[in-house]
Length: 249
Ligand code: HPA
Image 1 (cartoon, rainbow, N blue to C red):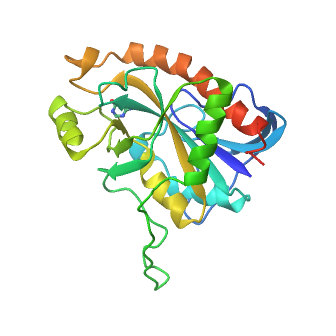
Image 2: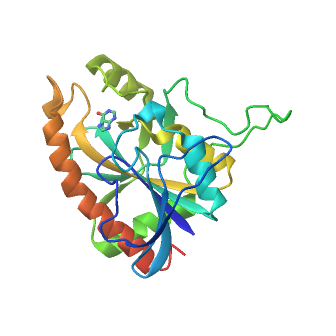
């Protein structure tokens, strides 16, 4: 079964026929909220709101391990993450949808592994390509069928938040090779990999990153809100096209 982890602006899937909600407990504590089971385009899937259904959990406080563990526990094999980002590369302006292919992790102090040695085992996983190739392909194909333009490939920088970055920090990220910046992509992606789940992301660019474009002298929060609403409608259409093709089951 496929799971969708919804970020800011996607605390619910309006086009999801909800069948039930389930509170799941995990060895890592509480997930961000109950899992929502439902049908999209006639196919079963599970949805969870990363920041909680009332959007109350900050990026650095999300219990990523509990979310991934809960999804695996109910039989999820593939996860599509939806997350808003700031655009660093000039052509990735507000409204752009991106399916990233790489990650640079700048987060700190988060529980970022299931393999922390407590069971006496140290495990190292391959993370050369952090996103699942087949699931990325499925997202890109679904976008094409839905008539939604998406950018194939970008380097996602995961920052700690919850504050946005300084202009100098964005310059540094760009120097490092990052194209978009968000706060929740890690450790979510690596935990999915450790758990053996296929994981890919849809990033929604909601603002130019700090010091870029119309964010040259600051980032307008109300503009982000408006962009989120508009872009998430397109994300929902893309997800519906994904499921209509039998990719959710
Ligand atoms: N920086 C970090 N995370 C974000 C941004 C940003 O500019 N926009 C949306 N999420």
